[in-house]
Length: 250
Image (cartoon, rainbow, N blue to C red; front, side, top):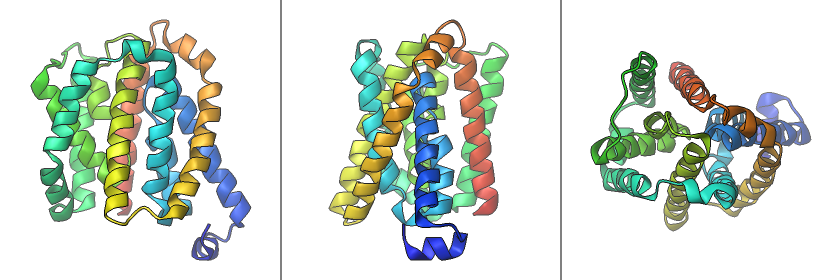
């Protein structure tokens, strides 16, 4: 880690690395069971300990972990749904960049958190959000914007799949995350904003996420017995609260 980070935190490099790796492993465990959660757990910790490696390092891990999940459950992925969500993410790239450049990070965080929490409240009282090409593209657009600014982009799409079985939720979100992370990494590399140090750190984080994936077997079994929807709603709500906190501190 950079010396500047050590001077600010007063924590030795090794402890900083261990803390960041542990956060990624826990995030990997959560995402391997629920379908999302890596950014929720790891992004705030890494940003606090060494913001210089964000977002590149976490994007590397964010591409590797979904590939592991898909290696087990790819047959359950909703390829058609992901294609519409990615169309929204790609088609709204210019708009997303404009919003991020024009709207303050604080306002954007509050708005997205409000949308997520409102959707959670509505779906909790049995109002089901329809899943069609328009809602999928909208979710993809919102997810791309929040992922760009905060590294937390799962909740908008997750809420559309909350009533599906665990394997379908995990596989579909993993497919979306893997493609999105690869596109983001390519964009960073082309624009010269993906230094070798970020890639090396990201590969270490990917190994930590793999540890979480390996330890998630019992969590998957538990959630797949009727708890997947609850877990998706809880993690999405936690993500919204993290966005609020991030906006307050921005």
